[in-house]
Length: 434
Image (cartoon, rainbow, N blue to C red; front, side, top):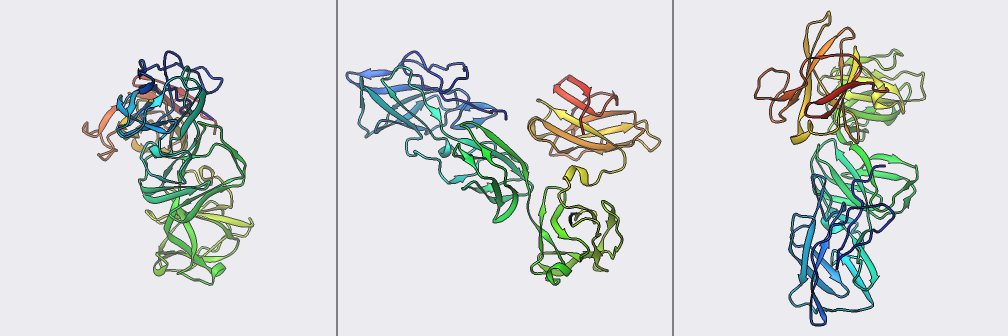
């Protein structure tokens, strides 16, 4: 598991000591000011942990306060940078210099990770950045982080996400990245709840060390669509809940052989059915409003159903089949893997593809991966070339209009199944292990 951030160094005097065995580049901020027998100003440096996360950098935030023993020191210089100067807050009693023991905590008003946290796009709630230390003397004073993070996006806008005993609240926008700070320990499984609906669960033990980051990827949300049928006495107002994963509305673990229709908003006012009674699995059927019931196959014990409300197509697979396995459009998969640069400013991607007996055409890439950004499209099996275009997210794609394009890959011969972008003009074809 890659660590996005690792340490916080509080530099008092000339040196700082790492909290663990990994080497870090020390950030030393200036001298501390001692007036007589009291500490009135101290300088604290940051390295790879954060009170706020800004494009991969670690920065202090205006208004930050630390607690030195029982007195509060407030950030007076260095906001939005990695080095901050803290001065005794008005009304606080200065701390004596030369004490044997100093206790330091950030933030000044918290000594534990709050269970309720505010949603901050691209970062996490600053009040959840809990750090602290107890040391003999001021030399080498170091603040060590005391939290791990769970990272995710949501398939549609939400108001709350709960997991591991912590809840993120506020405006949680689809496509944005969010983090929940959690206590670094071992958990007996994880259940993610979005807006009071359970959307992801595992019984696997999860162990966090300080600074670990667990990436859950895209969390689905409760769909307006549901499944009502012979398994629930055709109750449209209490259907099997479907989850929206950003592309499909999904119902999991439905009994084999049942008859059903799709309902919306807990009502039969809008419904979809077709009347299929065969045994084909992973096939596609177009839906119409009303009409006959749909009957599941009987080969497997249970089935998952993927339904597109946009084009009225659904697919049936044996329960537990991975989403990426359940149905592949005709043609071969081409993957786009981006390490940096191309994804700046929320760009999206499509490609002009040629060489097939079919007409040359545009194909859209859909994000499928975690970590480095990975995308996929399906092109005709006999296609020989393509040009991948980086798009302005405010404009529609599938066009040569220069106003929508932010550059492209140039003409590419399809020599493998994955196009890897390492930088603006640094890319190569590699093999994606499917």
